[in-house]
Figure (cartoon, rainbow, N blue to C red):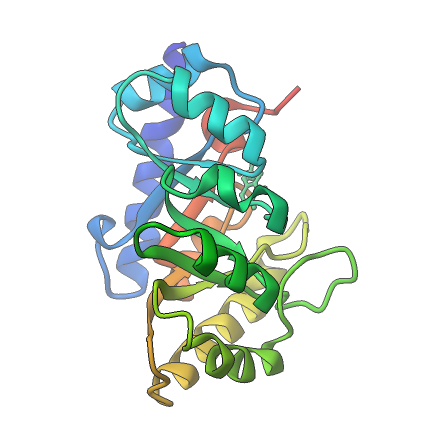
Length: 226
Ligand SMILES: *Cc1c(COP(=O)(O)O)cnc(C)c1O
């Protein structure tokens, strides 16, 4: 499993370089290792190498690995969350990246025993196949959401289009950052948005250059998923 360390070292270097280009350092960027479909032995190895934030996109897989993986990693839910699954993940995640409806906000609020940190997912490129709010839906969404005072909205997340050339996504990352800054200025109750979760194996360097402070990387660490 030496390749995991080699891949990770290479990614850390690239994160560091991209952070510098945007006036920041490696420490300003949170690397979430995406472990979907990856077995526990390789996940344990990643944790051993110091990556303590892990992302899963399916609830079932997250709760299974929550029990079986060694160490005590911070779990991030990065995939679509159905309201009927909320009860299974609460208390197990440090951050839910994929909130995209008021129905989901209501269910989280109703079920939560403690404060829950979430990001709002934005469909920044307007793709039919993607989840997330349209950018113009964000402000009314946040105004409605401020009544759920046990949910802390920490920022925004997006999954950019798949493209062989990451430069094609630069405009979308830039628009995400603009959206975050514009909404911060509005001082909406209960909204303190600093986090910007964007960038995957294919495009994380461009995402960081444009302001991402959380990147979600799977393939770059573990290789192609089977
Ligand atoms: C799978 C996944 C990732 C990681 O994708 P890679 O290309 O393997 O780095 C990031 N975010 C989400 C939401 C995912 O589902």
